[in-house]
Image (cartoon, rainbow, N blue to C red; front, side, top):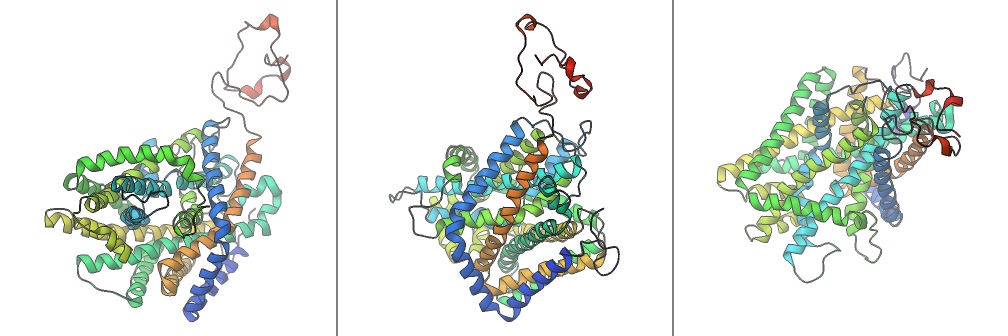
Length: 552
């Protein structure tokens, strides 16, 4: 039914999208290799050109996506199930929430958990110039929570919900083009759908490359700090990128799902060990108080921050932070959304939204408060001048924080633990990225040929290395922001498609609630006001419409 090649080099993939996506990625990579400075300049100029638009456009659509997904979880369609009406969830609630934790934790949190709060502590547009350290520390955590909180998970949850709904409820392939079916019908399986998949793949490649690039830079710093293995310069970055790429490709092609799963489980327990280390040997009472206080301040400021556009300032703070994060989350959405959709079969929209929005957000807040809070405590109390180290080298922020712990063995253990976590998170992210891109190209199929896994693993590694060579962090940020712009338009169309499809759904098949949308106004005759009506929702469609007691 769906257009996939049955033979040839692209067997099992969309024969139109696969070569176009590959050609586009190769062209970008070649430009980066042979025109490194020019590529960096072009990306930077393009970012500067669209920034005035993005400073309000990204703000509006991210706020809209969050409101939309909350409404889906509490509104009239909250009891619609991602599957058949009688279908039970594929995974237990505990297993499902555990996998959501795996989706929420990543190498980006290790990179920014200290670097971002300390950067905001050094200056942000919401601070009065009175040198109030307590206010500066509190606002730095609020801004960090904002960039990693409900707005980010709102876009992930919305895309995942759309994918799961059309796949498990409507029998469409687990692909982004499926959401266009209510809008354009059969044409969703022709060139309009191809364009949607192409944009999603390009955005995913750049989103993954940005994440891997940040992690590789931090891994290089960690190896130098913990074991004295210095790999400074472009050669060191390229070597680490090559090693990561080869390891990820080998593990995926060899079918080492069990091994990758064990690595993911190890990530969970290593992360718990790191947080436990900070709670026991760090400023425990301060950290626990910070979690509570920062969460309250975040909720108090959420609405204003969600619509903040930096209109009265001329500096680059909003562009460098909020616009970058919103672009990153939009580009990362196909990757995270596809994973969340795959594990959420059988959930109602209410269960889905409550789980995907709240659980990863709470875990992220706790993580940020413990890592970032330890650094802030050291800075405010004069134990260490971490802010200056962050300003000089973002990759050293987390390791500088570990050095504030006592005794020395604990500080060293924390640094080694972080280095190991960076390496394992990089590996699992690269593995998942390879599989997700092939899944997008194969209309949601989970069966992939080894040659395709090798090819796209190499492409991800190549783009990551090229962007690192072209200018490191700045080019990575600019590239992901630009890649997310066209995909944001795709997401808006997908939302419209979802709303069209939901018009055919029952409101909320629960006792005491309407099970079908009224087709016309109705009233109960005065002489029947006290009559007990049958509200059995097990088979509402079987009732003869003429006998429906709700009609006058």
